[in-house]
Image 1 (cartoon, rainbow, N blue to C red):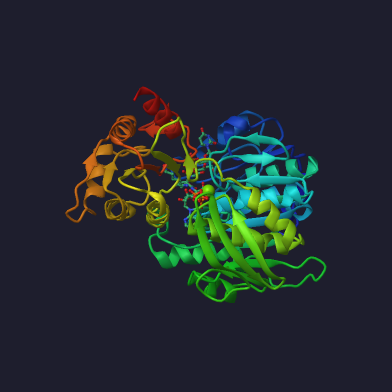
Image 2: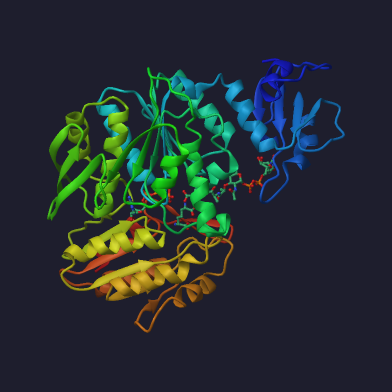
Length: 486
Ligand SMILES: CC(=O)N[C@H]1[C@@H](OP(=O)(O)OP(=O)(O)OC[C@H]2O[C@@H](n3ccc(=O)[nH]c3=O)[C@H](O)[C@@H]2O)O[C@H](CO)[C@@H](O)[C@@H]1O[C@H](C)C(=O)N[C@@H](C)C(=O)N[C@H](CCC(=O)O)C(=O)O
Ligand SMILES: Nc1ncnc2c1ncn2[C@@H]1O[C@H](COP(=O)(O)OP(=O)(O)OP(=O)(O)O)[C@@H](O)[C@H]1O
Ligand SMILES: N[C@H](CCC[C@H](N)C(=O)O)C(=O)O
Ligand SMILES: [Mg+2]
């Protein structure tokens, strides 16, 4: 695409003179520049992309988008906010690919990954060709790709949509993090459905206050747009048991499908029974009453399933077909995943890394633990510090044997993270074993028949980041080894 044509998407009221090179790619990393690229300078959290513009030009970049004048012999287009410009340019350059997809975005503190997998299965079972973007991977039809972020920046996002559309994908499900909403990574995404799971404390290092965090999540619903296309209606799927939903309902013009357990809702679960093999409930919906029998356990799983049923209905799939798909799901990797190596006690690996998810996981464990509950828990470094004492307090409150350990300490001192956690202990006894492997081995060695070990925080992760080093580490494999050594 010619530079001038591309720039008109950015500044529609302007006409452009001067050099008009053909733009062959848009990149924001000088290491990825190929001749003809348009280089976008991003002021990052660690470095400033403007410092790499000269190198980009040397590698053959045809033009640069920047937030200030740069002394280069290629065109430099100065804009107020390059992240914002990058979203517009990416959407235009890739031919507005999200418009070719039935796009579902999921936001909320907990349950995004689980709910996105549920929705993907419902869509795939209904014959749709699906794509998925989230914490664990990006999936385009049957191929998966590694990811760095839950929601990638706009350039990666739009190029992923392009690849999806080109591969014949018709429906895409994506997790939308509050960081992504706040930074505008999803500007340009034409969502058909926006799903809200819940809002509880996390990421206050970034958003500072719960009000700001709630506002960021609300952008997904406000950005669904205000016009009505009755051929293809837009929907907001909202959790009526979460107080934030009332605000999101106000901020969206889209049709609302509410779901819940405790409050009135369009989709409501009643007569909930936890069984040894799963969870049963009656679904009350505009289509009547249906029995649902899940293989997953925990009240939180019912919420995820209700949200997915809402997205399925909004996608035009029949209620009976949706229920059939949901009933088949055993779970999602690293989410309440059991480790079974023939032992007579339970070992559960769960991705609970927030106070609310830890509490939910432990409330679920309490339903079937016969004797002791060992909770192995740590908190990530370079992340919300205020959740540390809260998570420690919950671990102590709900377990007989809380064990504080390391999660991903990143650049922080692991011992200081443990000290921050200990501030939440209100006189209960606990153990501190900084080495995560040692902590898992200790619990496995000391567990007996009927006990439960919950290994929280890292779920599907197959690494541990200490300082700048990333080691192989998988809670599931470490637990298995420990059981086999017993
Ligand atoms: C704090 C944060 O959000 N950081 C994100 C940010 O990184 P950054 O600002 O450090 O980038 P940077 O390294 O300073 O680089 C700035 C610019 O210079 C360029 N550069 C850099 C080096 C170089 O040699 N050449 C070069 O051109 C880079 O390409 C970039 O354009 O931009 C990167 C590229 O988009 C992101 O991968 C990175 O996410 C990091 C990994 C991260 O941990 N983010 C977290 C906070 C996050 O966003 N989390 C949410 C999920 C939360 C949840 O679900 O619970 C998420 O959506 O992932
Ligand atoms: N609806 C829910 N409500 C509360 N807790 C939940 C819910 N669903 C899952 N959880 C808990 O939260 C953990 C993380 O779940 P999941 O990975 O689906 O969430 P997420 O929102 O994608 O998290 P992340 O922000 O880290 O990507 C699970 O391991 C479980 O303990
Ligand atoms: N998306 C979350 C994941 C946290 C997972 C936990 N294991 C950690 O490293 O803190 C975050 O980036 O805050
Ligand atoms: Mg996730």
